[in-house]
View 1 (cartoon, one colour):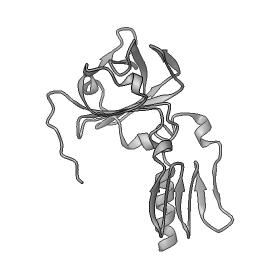
View 2 (tube, one colour):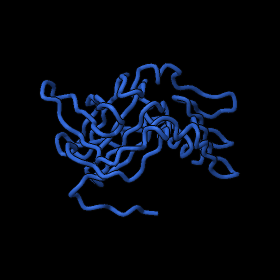
View 3 (spheres, rainbow, N blue to C red):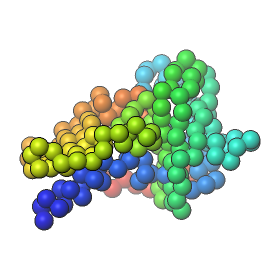
View 4 (cartoon, rainbow, N blue to C red):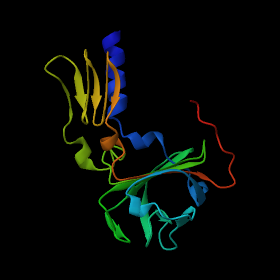
Length: 194
């Protein structure tokens, strides 16, 4: 039973982290008040609210404005559900900042927008190459999938390990690039569970 539970946990950790977060169609559009922003100091200067607006020419494209100084970020619908929408953010230069890859999610459950730029961990599963390593059994009898391994000694995924000593988070890896979280203006703010 213990091995079965560890296997399920490992597969859950290996799944794209963004699939749990997403947004519903047009309800994601609007203005967002910043809850958190982590990124290079030269990008933190904007006091304006982040705005998510629809592209007039494409139903799958949205623009994230006021996230980075000097421009807006193009995002493309990746997945949709009744409660969430996930956006893929392609490589682009915004102002003086080079975006290599990114993702954004909106959850109608808590009216939150999360944006991650240049962080492979937060946007895992958005590219086909994320699945190139396949799924397999480790030398010690655990399972490995998508950079995550689960075995008798614990769980390891890029930036996080869980074992009998506890949970160790490599914040430099987990928080790399630009991380933004904001709540939709006019929506009831949901309190955190902690």
